[in-house]
Amino acid sequence: MRRSVTVLVLAVAAACRSVPFRVEAEHGRPTSRLRLVAAPGARINARLKPALELMDGTVLRFDSPHRTADSAYFADAPTTERALPEEAHRGVVRASVCPSDEKICRSYELAVRW
Amino acid sequence: MYPRLPWIAAALTSVLGLGLLAAGRSDGSGARPAAVPAAGSPAPELTNGSWLNSDRPLRLRELRGRVVLLNFWVFTCYNCTNTVPSLVEFDHRYRDRGLTLIGIHTPEFPPYAGEHDKGNLSRALAQYGIGYPNAQDNDSRTWNAYGIRYWPSFVLIDKQGVIRYTGYGEFHLDDAHFRTWDARIRELLAE
Image (tube, rainbow over all chains, first blue to last red; front, top):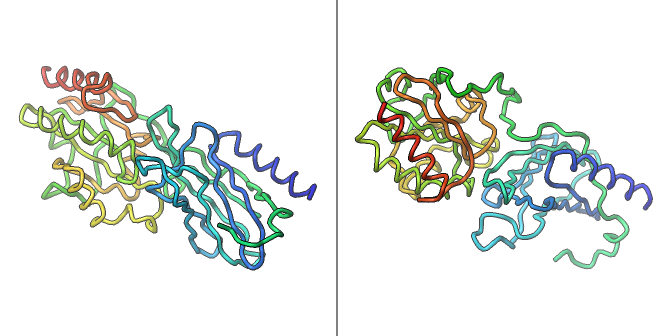
């Protein structure tokens, strides 16, 4: 448990530098579920669902049924879930994030392992 | 709902960010813009080969004598599509007076997201009533040539092919930013 918490702190520290979201994992059998949690003030573009690109080329998309009233952004953390072998637990998360106060969108990539 | 999995509580939240690959815009090739052409610089030529609302690829050298407004956008960007009514209005107001509005459609994601697809872009143009030319910038060549970072972005080019104004961010019909861009267009048309 201590190790999990330590890893989370590192992930948050990395995210705080400039990526306006963090990725959380819930490990299970047989599936793992990843959640994309936006930083305060950041909105994750729901028209362009975030993606987890695995090392073998597989692409998993994050989604959530809960959207903002204009349907443009996720109202809660989108998730993706898949049964994967342990060695496949790494890849790149790609997301389009639109800060509410800037009226723009930017693309971000974050390498992840869980 | 994530059902009946008591192990979740004990195994919560353990993703490690291996490292930041890129913050901000990342094109498919990983290449970064070499330089951002500033106001007063010659506008980089358009070299895109696939166009909609135009019977042939447009080139800036053929548009000398006209004011050109480039709009960097993508149809999956809400800030971009919210700005389209203003751009359509500019097109209606000023096309006959010498303005050429050009959409540079630059995808955010790799092709699996559908932004590269010409049919999808064509449907978006119809959906938003866009009648001005649009280039498919699927390899981000124009995005990179202009050093663009955000969706939407704008570059206003004078009749001599010189960049005069740049900017970014959503705006709406008759708001302050709309009026600013409107004034800039009229200024360049009057030169």
